[in-house]
Length: 112
Image (tube, rainbow, N blue to C red; front, top):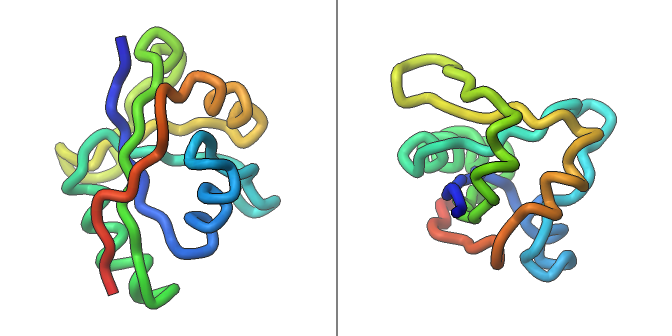
């Protein structure tokens, strides 16, 4: 069984995902100790449209599947309102997280 996750992202990160054949997220930068996938598309759209576009000129929403059993180690974090839900994956666990992605990471929205 898998769980659908979304991630808002900018052009630099998306280019790295493309280099990884749409199968993994790139390692975090030193100033990025946590990887934040989100649990609903609306929240991802808001971040991509309102934050990524402002900072990068373009924002993307991606969707991907991860093995549900593996995700149980990450408690759901409420980062604001009732629907602002995300997982906090420590950077040092991202390689293992990537190993549990099922299928490809897909771009579902683009904002400019």
